[in-house]
Every structure is written in C-alpha cells, then in structure tokens.
Image (cartoon, rainbow, N blue to C red; front, side, top):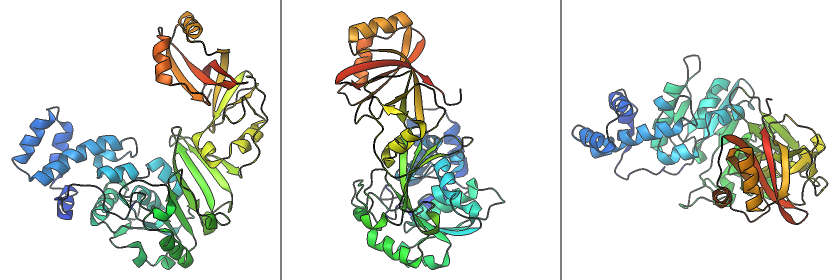
Length: 408
C-alpha cells in the first residue's frame, strides 16, 4: 500500500477515523447497513446527530464494505478508504504470497495501507505493518482486530517513513510502493514512491524482499539476474507482479506465472524463461486453448504450450489448438463445434438454429468489436456457447465452441 495519503475529504481528520473504528460508531454503521431507506433520508438523519465529516465516513464505509466483499471475507467488519480498497491485495492473493515465507518468520509489510497483505502475513509468526499515513495505520490496526482470530498474534503497526525502518531486524520484508505518487497511475518503477534508490537501500540491509508492482511494470534491468518475477492472476485477470529476492526467490533470474482460483483450488504455476513460440498450423483441431492472463504477461506461453504439445492456430496470436481436452487451470479449453468465415448473416442463422441466446465472444488479432457483433447477431434461445473470432491463414474466422470446465 502506498505511503502517500489516500484520497479522502480534506476536512476529515485522523480523529474521525479513530471514532469510525471505535465501538461508538458501530451502531451507526449497523443501522445504515441494514436500512432500506433512500440514501438522502439516511444522510439527513445522520447529520442531525453527527458532524458532516462523520456522516460522510459512515455512509462511505457502508458502500465500501459492500464493494470489499469481492476481496475480503470479513469485509462487513473491516474499514477502508476508497483508494486504499482499490489498491489493497485481496485475501486469496495475499494468502498465497504469504505462503512463500518460511515459518516462523518476522516480516515487515512496508507501505501496508489498510492491511491486505499484513493480515495474511500475521499467522506466519510476527508481522509489523508500516505506513506513513496515520489514517492507514488506524485502519490497518482496526482490520487486524476484526479479521484475525484469537490464535493469531496481532501485528504491530507503525506510522513512519520506510526510510526509518530497520529491516535488518526482520526475516524478510514486503513493500507496495505508491504507483500514483504524481497523482496519476504509472507503471514506471522509477516514478514510484518510495523510489528505486530507497528500495535498493532497503535491499542492501536485508536482501529477503518481495516488491509488489503493477503487471505491466518494466522491471529494472539490474534486478533481472537476482529476482524471481511472478505474475499472479485471479478470476482471469492478471492482478500484480511481485519481484522476489533473496531467500524468497525460489527460481532466481526466472519467471513464474501463477493462477489462483478460490480458496479451495491449489495454485497453478508455470516457471521458466520466454522461449520460441510453438509451431503454427494455420488450422483448428478439435480443441482450442487460451493461456491465462498471467501466463501471457510473464511471456511463458511457449513453456506452457511445450508442456502440453500444443500448436498455434496463427502466428503471433495466443490461441492454441490440440486433439485432446486438457484439465489445466493455466489454460481455458474450448471444444470446437463449427469453424466458418466471419459472415454475420450466416453466423446469425447458425446460432438461431442452435437456439443459442447466451454467447461469450472472445477475439484476438482482428478488428472486431464484440458488443457490436453481439447486437448484429440478434441472439435468441436458451443455449449457451463461446464464439472465438481470430485470423486464420489471413482470413477473419469464427470458431463456435463450448467452454470445457477444467473440473469436468
């Protein structure tokens, strides 16, 4: 989480957040959360008894807790700011990352924000969160109280600059630099806060580090011989890139793509270095495969394709094909039904004949707008299918298919 102040109304003070996280505010939060009255009526009622700042915090917090359900199982008891929730690591990714630390460990979570990673690190021994924004420290402490069970040692939270932290005293450390230090999000690591110089000073004191970055970040060349770069995806979206150093780097100088599902699904990782693309056939076999976003971001498509002996349908396009279905969470698998030129009239007739009213449209390497195409197809019926639009042998081609669940 960033060191800079998260976006919030300028007249809301840390004291208001102390109040928000106290038992005194709990009845207001519960009342608004359970209410079905219009928002304007709730605001008017609150302002008769609370200051405008605290009214704002209560209303905002109820909304943010609803949004946070996708990230945290304890969201209804936790505390957020709008920007801090956007940037927080969700608990499934945080739990996976924490599993890479040895037990017991003393870990510092620098720029901890509201504590997404800190909560996952706490069960591994001793965890300390650090953020120079006092509001983030207040929220991280409160979230640890409500989200961690009594068997877990509560993490310490410090309000200070990371430059003042003695990382020599911990086993390993994690940092989430601010990617919006200039006000606009950037993938340029040199523009993050703290910057590369500060991070390098920390690494000199303790080389066992995990640095959270945006998936599209350009990693400094000096890191490449030492770091294991890991792109992590969840629900089909590549969420973050982590540079692991020291004892945390299981494969120094290599890349890892990790696909996460729900908490019951084991992580699936592909490890290696980018290599030659698989051979191109220019045709479609019985099954079409699409690599996960983390695999593509890591450039490890060739490694995964070689593992399964798959070929590319077209040069430069990340659709592969093969004769057998595969159960691999790093690949989406589609069983082919029809392959035809992209002719809207012909395709519409085929879909109507099959009674397909629910159509997932995917495309790569062609100038096709899926929603515009969907309107032209005038879908009717209750059956479902997937339409893959791509270029094959220089022609825009439609592949009508059925998504195969990896659990089948």
